[in-house]
Image (tube, rainbow, N blue to C red; front, side, top):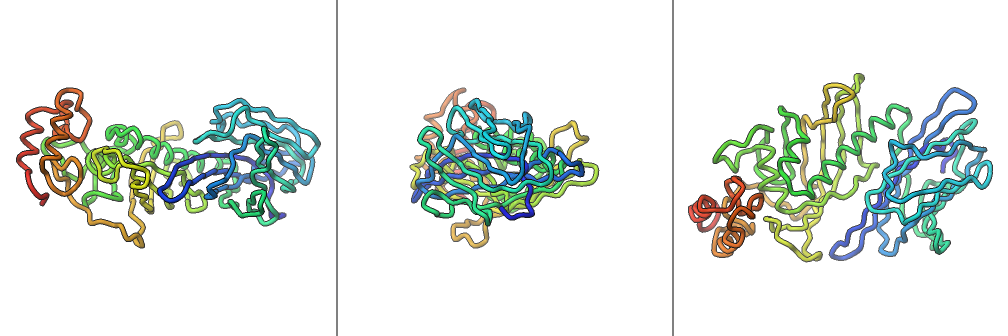
Length: 383
């Protein structure tokens, strides 16, 4: 790593998903740098590793060699989200390794802190499969991560410079990831709870309108309400949010620490691109690249961050952008018309068990005659 960068903290997230044409392995390792005035102080440092190699290997050990002696190497409890147990061993005054009992799992996070005099530099950092002894990747002098064949599989992308920024900025990143993870549950009410009562949303898909976070109005299923957006436009497509590229995220936090904005890029994979949670083969999954701005507010430092304003828009260079349209009640398979296929889906979900599905058009917890009447009333090509 470049000589001006002190060693500080490691935060890792691992995510795997099969795309139609290739496998994608993503490992996010964020290091945050902090300096302090005393001779021997606690230091943190980090990086972001993003690999798109099909044959990128998993790791369960990290070996670190620093330029100066270090002591007190420990896992930071607040940032420990690793499922497996771990062991930290110092094999020398400036050399240590972290070995996990299992391969780092999808979604795992961890952070380290150590004490050193001065500002240590990375001499060598290796990601290792301890069971085979194989080096998966290592950090070179330019901050690039290379595998055993010297191929570049990642690079340093993100850093911070103050202790309070480590906590606050990472808290915002975690909040966005929590928002993304909740999408998989398919619950529109759970998504609405991420937003303040006075929140607004300009969404990626859906009605070309400004959504507001207010109670669902009876009979207004196509109204621009945040809950409706998730219920009728986004969740039925089963969106999977990929881990954020931290190098493409900019966060600003107000002086009192209760207002924050995050701008960046995210990617969703639509597992049911035709909507209504209909299953699709992996080769039909549809990736959506988008830009975001989240504005978070909280009443005080002890309250969770809630979204005040949220803007999300598809990458304008995408050739798959479709015009926004209102909900077509009864079009359960998203093909732009209400016909026998939709009727079959509704009848198949008939009864209390159909509550919460696309067939429960009026959201009363069951699929019954009222839903059938709405479907038949919209029969034909959607307007």
